[in-house]
View: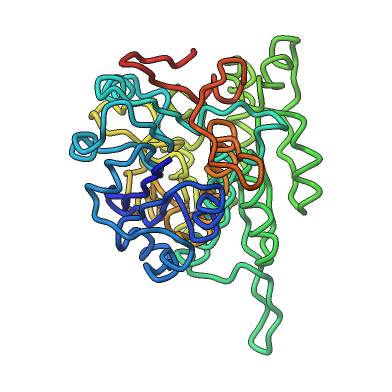
Amino acid sequence: MLIGVPAETAAGESRVAATPETVKKLVAQGHAVSVQAGAGVRASVTDEAYAAAGAQLVDAAAALGAEMVLKVRSPAPAELAQMKPGAVLVGMLEPFNAEGLQRLAAANLTAFALEAAPRTTRAQSMDVLSSQANIAGYKAVIMAADRYQKFFPMLMTAAGTVKAARVVILGVGVAGLQAIATAKRLGAVIEASDVRPSVKEQIESLGGKFIDVPYETAEEKEAAEGVGGYARPMPQSWLDRQKVEVAKRVAQADVVISTALIPGRAAPVLITEEMVQSMKPGSVIIDMAAGKGAPNADGTVGGNCPLTVADQTVTRHGVVIVGETNLAALVGADASSLYARNVLDFLKLVLPPAPKGEPASAFRIDPEDDIVAACLMAHQGAVTRKS
């Protein structure tokens, strides 16, 4: 099969959907791979490395015109216009963006959104949300350390003692856990909050302290367990009590990193304007849900904090609020390496490796495969996403 890897065109996007490592494996399986010249430059991958792996270097039209196209982000309208009807598209295609999925169906593409893969053991190796969130959690702490005008670790010097920074992590999924681990390595004192009681052990194993909010009803406990690895909206009674406990910690914090997202819904407000006002001047908030919150009264969209401005760093009430919306792309080399491996593992389900010495296997859709079925967003001119 002819597989195309175009350069990403979204602003600030440094990642690429295939690396020389994965290209080499695809070529070894008997597929032809065409990579757009310059596609890997922002991820520190040269054209020469792709060529050495067996790829053919082409222009954008040739890469997008392949039988199968591997991308990081969903194609823009100009890119869609260059894709062939009936082609296969694999990437992060925003499965909750109904308008975007309709465009893919109208272009008569067979489209797979890797974010929709179930959170199961079998799907772990192709879990793009986890691989990219892991990188984002690391980068969030590094950005916080850069913006914060004091040390993270405690230092005892001849000029006096410097206290360790207090870091509060809100939302302890993959990104939050990596943020805890990274902040701990830098010497910070860490507290973390999440709606799921099961993460308490994980937080403490990484050296953080869990902000505990007891459950008072069976409904609260059931919601806290989540479904399929994802958090569920908590009852208002619990949220009110959590807000009080979190507000106390936020007021004392030097750095707050919020990571809370609920698939298909607006990100919850965890850091109110009143909480920001209570923070010390020079404190830093890294809002990893920037641009995904509920609309504010003035029409703007924040994140876990309504004061966040997507893709901007602003100062409000003396607090620096970072609204970077694509943290993983700031670590383009490793983000691409992990993402490309996720893609390669998914391709094994639709392009199964042929026995040694035989021609490459043809593309196929197995409707009985739970991962393939969950990721299939469009096929034969219709949106096929399962709700």
